[in-house]
Picture 1 (tube, rainbow over the protein chains, first blue to last red):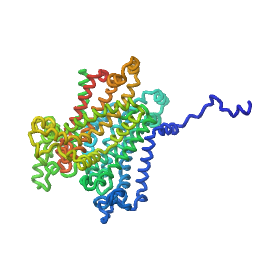
Picture 2: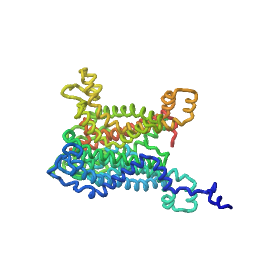
Picture 3: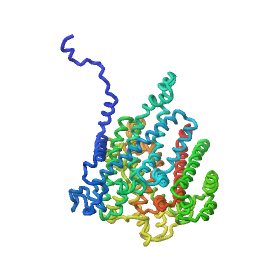
Picture 4: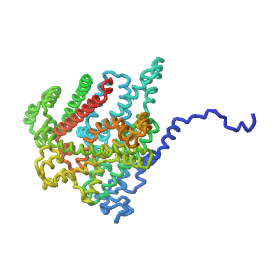
Length: 303
Length: 337
């Protein structure tokens, strides 16, 4: 063998296939919108985590000498309050970035709790079937028969309006989608040969469901979970707007909007800011979620 | 078909019973004494409390109370508002036409714009138009509609003075009997000049606000469904035999592409009713959503209970009707397990 041929790439030499993460990333990065969405989401999370470093103001303190200040690009605005102040003299920039903490906290809490409960109930339904499955399905039907916001309002009426209860209410409202998704994917997996093989070798049910079936059901669940964050966030803001979510003076974007809706003529920018914050956050998460869906599970199309 | 019908009906019964149970529990679980909650009074004397408790059957067993509640519902008694002292059904169905009118307009708005937009995006896949349309659709999908409403009011009402800020019609100018409750129809029946135009002007902004989310959903759905259909062999055949591209898309492909879209439109009823709560609150639209929020703020729990029950029944019946309809149109649905 000559030295020359040793340096030549050998045709047919197996190239190591990209790892699962690399494969996912190259599919995800193809979608420009998704990458932009991810960057924006990271920026928002960053702003929430490092809020105290990004503003010298406390979101709850009222600066009485600077009430109803417009943002800096409007005549009369000051650099000391870049997005202006609200009618009580609280700094809008501080309220918006501290508000991102609340919104992201709500979105993530709802997502984590409902995914977790959804996976457990969904797997039990798929494995056990029978009467348990029927009862769970009927309860889910009931939850879905009541329009989401109306059901959330009803739950809030019973347990009272505050931040924790917002999370509880929205988790209950969104639970059916996770349970149904896990249940139907697990049912499909359970009919496959590898599950039968595992059963024959005597794998116990718990281990079978968690280590063999669940990983194969995860792709649609991850996609749903990502998009569920934005839905939860929007729902929480809607409840806040109706006065049934986080209570003032907490800088929650929805309740900030509710406080300022009467100022629409006199101070439109006070009303504009929280809405823009909600829109950008939700849009970014949805862009990212769409990219995740295309990368993880191209068959799953969301309307 | 009959078997399918019976099976589908039987499936709604447990949901309905569960619904009654949940709304029954609502009144028992809200904070405060159940009698005070129901009567809207505070500081009732112990003797009167005992008497009221007996009158309302609260000294009976829970099971008996639930039975009485269910019995009343089967006789059309959904409770009485503690504020107005009128039956909940009277209040609800007085306000319901306003919500239906708004939701219908919003639904039409979404379908009329959404289907062509989705078709166009699918045909021009990957083009600038497609990207612009789909970006708009995703923005619409992400829109906090309560804020969207305020923004539209700011521009069209406060700055341009084109549309009214709230309500359904200028009651001072155009007060007239409302036989149907649908103001677009009533205003025509009244024969007063300008009444219809005024009612329509009041409808524009709420329609856009409530229609935005369904519009985005329908446009995205139509596009993806259309893309799938355009790959089918029969579409290629139609193209190969020389039909004009417009004919292929609008006659051949659209028919099949619309099947999932029609299902999606049916599912929008729940979205529309949930959105109506927010939209009606912003525009002071006198419908059931606005009334529901007002009830909760007034602590009128019986009204809330009856209202939620009625809304859920309407959604259940609507979904049932849609299911039966799809069974009629598509025989395969009937024979699913």
